[in-house]
Length: 186
Image (tube, rainbow, N blue to C red; front, side, top):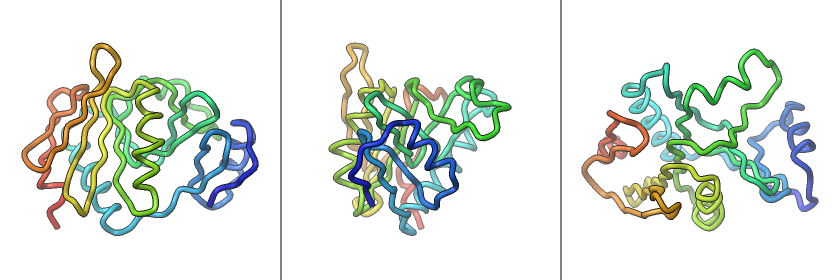
């Protein structure tokens, strides 16, 4: 559900913090409710979080689902998964009621394809993550059993690679490898 009237980020924060049900995003000043997850979508998210948690040092990185990222122009997204350096949490620690919204580039942002957001993720969300300068972006398609990665290059462009098998090692997460088949195993 999208609300046609434009709103400021402050108004968005008031709605989100009011306890109104729903996972709300702000798309260029428009309030949009993020749809719920299907079983397959949720299974991939849960499995990937588990795989990251087994390999990451929690003193350096934390894995989140449904926290927020900001990009300029009144846009706030809730990625399916994001890996966040623990240092990014400093401005939010000990501040009850303050939403964690990350503006700085992240090492890894992941979206899992779903029928309701698939086109939007590719056409709008992916370019926004690239504008933010996120180091690596993944889009996982649970039905095609693919992982597409976009890795930021030294010149600021992104190199796209389609993965159907084998392993992938996120460039900004030393020592982490994800087995593509393990993501899709039942």
